[in-house]
Structures are given as structure tokens and as C-alpha cells.
Image (cartoon, rainbow, N blue to C red; front, side):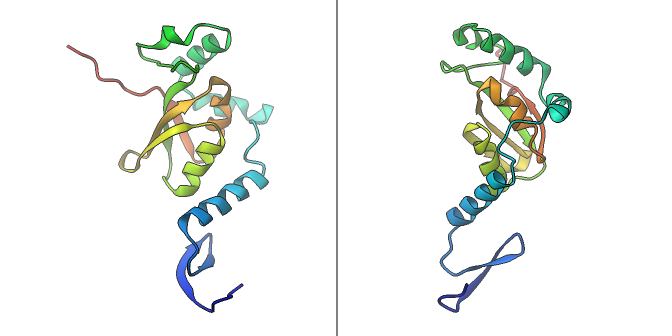
Length: 152
């Protein structure tokens, strides 16, 4: 509806947004569409193998160890790292980096997200039980541990 009769030309999914509609409003609307469409749920059992194939085996193994009660402090150093809350540090590679993609990742448990547009990845932390739901998103290509610099 055009209350003011002014359009700013910004589009979202083919819809024109009225002047004064901010990026935050557009992101909120996209998040709601993701949620309503059922994307916020866990992967269906028939989709689990496809989602699991996107997750690095080292992350899957570390997640299983954390969920079995291993102290997160044992992951303070090494190829896979966890914080004191038991969240794994991950790189999520995506096919495109948009506000909607960032909102979808956040809705599926990725926190402290740091996007790298030129690399098509988002670095962040995720609870191990959210790994498959995150991997099941259609725009996620793969999820790996970060590549840490090693001293010589």
C-alpha cells in the first residue's frame, strides 16, 4: 500500500518497497518468510544424508564428542575449536552472501557471524546439534572448521 505515494525503487523479491522502509525491515520480512515456509525446522530424515555430506567429518566427530559430554576445554586448541559453551567455530560456505542468507544462518543457530563476501563464507559459532539444520539450508555449500594459522 502506498500511503505517501512515494517509492524509493528498492526491490525485494520483485516487490517494490515504500520510501522509508529500511534494510532492517526487509531483513525481518525475509526472516519471517523463511520461518513461515518451514525452513526453520530440523532436516527431514530423508534429507539428513545430503545435509551430513555438507559437514566436515572432523566437525561431525567433534560435535558427537561434545554432545556425549566431553569438556569443551579439550577443544581450546587444534584443528576443531569449541568455546566454553560447547559451540564449534565454523566456516559456512554459501552460494551468495545477502542479508536474507545471514538471517537464515542466524535463525538456524549461527552466532557471532562474521561474513567474508569475497570468499562467500561466514565465520561463526554453532551448537553441534544445529549443524545438520544449518547444512540443510539450500544456500549452504559446505561447513568446515576454520583454517587456523600455524606457528613454524
